[in-house]
Length: 438
Image (cartoon, rainbow, N blue to C red):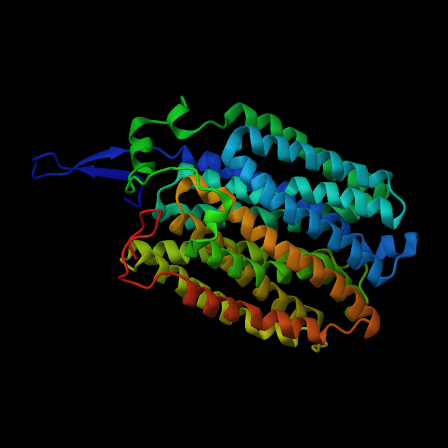
């Protein structure tokens, strides 16, 4: 039941209600903090963009190519480390991923050339690519279907908390120290998380703090065969292609927000990093609400009796419609109106993203979840690499005009919904390989 209890009636007229516990939400909290650190580390360079471009004499094209390097290696990290998570498990796999990306985050402080930044961004991207496949796999292990999109929305909200923390921490470090110290301090945070994860995480069946009632609740969905599926065979599943479509059409937009919105606010409204702190915090606080809200919406619909995939599609539609007005952001003359438009779009992106990730656990066997998320991420961030290179060159060619970029961003989510609708199984067609009735 949704209130954290299970009703049992073994031949009795009255219900016997057993508390099942909430330890699974402790695991969700750890995933939330991993995602927070993940986004904190990747967001620093976007915030420092005006400073780095001034101190190191970069062009928009240089910055775009550095961001593109991260995207390229992040794509390979997503697919390669995602597959590794299915082989070694998330306890070892995710802790290694966080430790390695923390090292590369700190190494930014030692770089001065475009080539040096490409090297450390590549290493950061390769290691950070393991976070989301591992988190989705953990949610599939620790949550029943009806709670997965909510759990995904909660851990995915960590991306916005990281993006909120960065514009608070980085300007202060820049003010009182330097941009090199900013990279060192933010990069070192991940090592504390690794220790906590290694101490706390186990599979549900192996965890000493998990009650038998909560384990039964987690395993209450129909049991499916957990055979290991070769990569090429994964391309034969609808869920794989739905994830590819949804991720490829949404992830590059989020990447644009993370890396170019600070620069957009600086150029359009002539604000420095300290002045941009509050607007950026507002944008990513709004995005946090969307992440949890989008996950809650489809979970709520499922609990009300709506078929699983139909509930996900309704959430996609609501989020896609909320993104549309962002095309106006480049032309408004009021800073806070632009912040509102971008914030609503970022919020809708996060709700959309939470459901794109959850589609994988809805449609795929649990043993293949991290691999499929990895494949989708690989495709999306290869696309993001070319998008990042194109954004830099377009801004250089148009003297920093963002109108075309916001226009494209406003339309991609509804296009993604249409494609996913055509790919996914239709209602009443049976069950997915994950055992979900559609």
